[in-house]
Length: 400
Image (cartoon, rainbow, N blue to C red; front, side, top):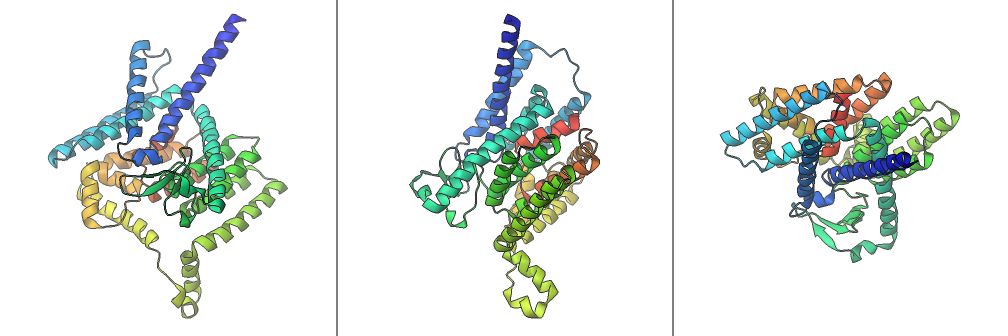
């Protein structure tokens, strides 16, 4: 009886510990507080990493054998750090970004040894459902009542202001009416929700429809073009895994809502399609989308930088400086940025990740392909270089 009670207490402690770790990971993965002056989230992550390493040293290595694939990931981290350090020395840049990048990668690697992939996905879904629920309620109430204007305002390092409700945020120019949850940009929120939905659909035989509804409604409320494209993948995944009449009805409902939302909030895209059908009729209605052009340019400029040093790349800081000299546009492609920053090492890492997802045994091949497609979209529309959550998911797949 005592041993059973002790086992329950131990399990509870470990569960709380795991939630804390995921909380730290979220704080450093696009959270509004991670881009404010002082950047307390980085210090929290670094302190957590030190505590985790200290715990490993004090308690020794666990009896189970070290996963050889984890050693491979560690080798990649060291190589990436060396490349970045050498480039910083050559171009006389500071090492702050190198230390931050190394900390994020090491935290992510040790994190994967603390809990199973299955447990992570379960907690991740619960956390995103909670974040989405709070954000959706706050968004709806704020949209109709305008109470945001009574909240304190904080600014990030780029001068963007947010209404701060602590458990969720709203951009200062709330007239755009987009739900950002606790993240600095609605696209990031949309991506994290989409990942939660895919995990929910792929891993749960008995789907929690309330959970799915909350996540999907919140995803719609971000009004993110990226999120809407990911919805198409989600819908296909839902149909594939839930082959019944009820699923088909829900799918058609989502498609209808999606088409309406997409048409309203992406009018330029719709008009461009109409232009191709009849240039004479619709040519005067077209307003070219700068966002799409910027994302394409980001990929092209990164590849141009990569071609100047395809073997080693130019490191974190120098690549950003080179990109800034080439364009005033925003950096949006993490995948090609990796190529430019780390050269062949960046390419090898990306290839290994996608191969690992395709070979993931707990999903069918079609599920793996759909997730790869979603991941490729994610890596080419947002910069997630310093997001622990992204590396954690990536490392889990590689280690499986």
